[in-house]
Image (tube, rainbow, N blue to C red; front, side):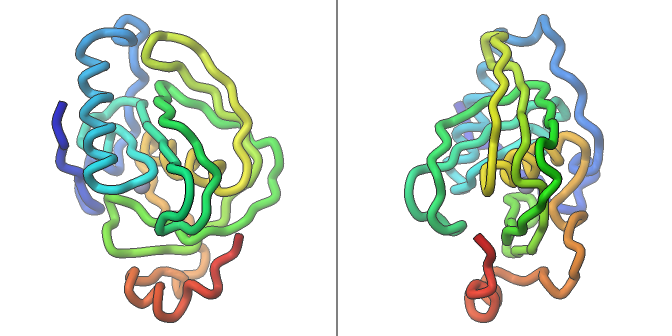
Length: 181
Ligand code: ZN
């Protein structure tokens, strides 16, 4: 296991569509090792989600882990470590809500992004099991943020009001009171 370097905005690999994970790769030692590295990297950088393209691995794989209690995103509902291979999203309710998002590939910034808040997520796990879950609220935003990375998108692409992009220090000082729940 190893902490990998997270590539940052401007690296062309963050803008490429990632490739499907082939069925014969699921369950292999190589994929288990890659996921172990991603978990180490996520914990070392202190994030809540990481997509494989962020460590310059162009495959459709992302991990999400929302720890219980307070984080820099405020109080969250817990989501145990979830490993999503070849995930898909279906929007169940078009109604959107906004959150101040951040990204390990766009360090030091926060931006306000509105996304649908009720989605169905389907994905394959490391052992080839297929799962379907419904995600609402902030969790729905987190899944959409991570899976965007698999299509070469960053959260800044979704900021409709450019005045709502801020450095973290100024966000804490001037904008955090405006955060929507
Ligand atoms: Zn991100």
